[in-house]
Amino acid sequence: MRAQTRHQLKQDAFSRATIEVAGKTADWTVEHRTVLIASAVVIAVLVAAGVGGWYYLNQQNEKAGLEMTQAVRTMNTPLRPAGTPEQPDFPSFTSAKERDLTAQKQLRIIVDKYPHTRAADIAHYFLGVTSSNMGDNAVAEKNFKDVAASGNRELSALAKFALASLYANSNRTKDAVALYQELINKPTATVGKVTAQLQLADLYKNSNQPLDAKRIYEQVKKENPTNEAGQLATQKLAELK
Image 1 (cartoon, rainbow, N blue to C red):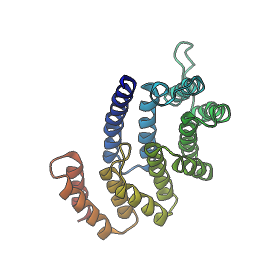
Image 2 (image 1 turned 90 degrees about the vertical axis):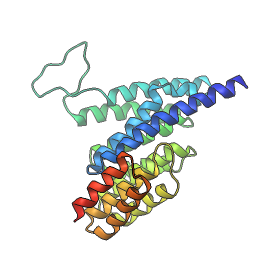
Image 3 (image 1 turned 30 degrees about the vertical axis):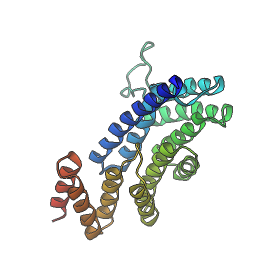
């Protein structure tokens, strides 16, 4: 019973953390690339908070969690300006591509060494994020689809969210709309209803479908009259006029 209580408390803590980060993506509806980064932050929260202790009940999974933590650190390593020498005590990369390639090597090791762990699913997600960053949409799509089909509802939702963004950036509007609508109908802690709504409305706006965008912004405004989402919807409606 005590173990169950501890597990539930940790699950609740994770939910609060992911809700906070996912909610912030509502402010980032213009740049789809940033949405992918926001999604990655949610997973970084999960890993940094000790995902091994939350979900991984055996030694193999804990090892995978530790290696995932290192990969997340790599993806968060700062970039140094061109011509600036590397500082031994302060890891850095010369470019985002160099950083992504280094992270991908670490992520693939996790996938190969721990194929049946949750860490492997998270690694697939990040392989999708880094591939998207480098413009390799085919590889990104495959990895996001793999994660979307996984058994973890929260992680699957993040993958679908990132996949929808990928489709939106690739002029696959119909596919993106379908995924956003699915996330609206089945919200999760990692991708809330309002987050998916605002992304869908933004997609309609950028696809020259202002009436559809207006409909969703009005719905968000009606359902969130006193919070930041409602204020953002009001701002977006004013921009449509």
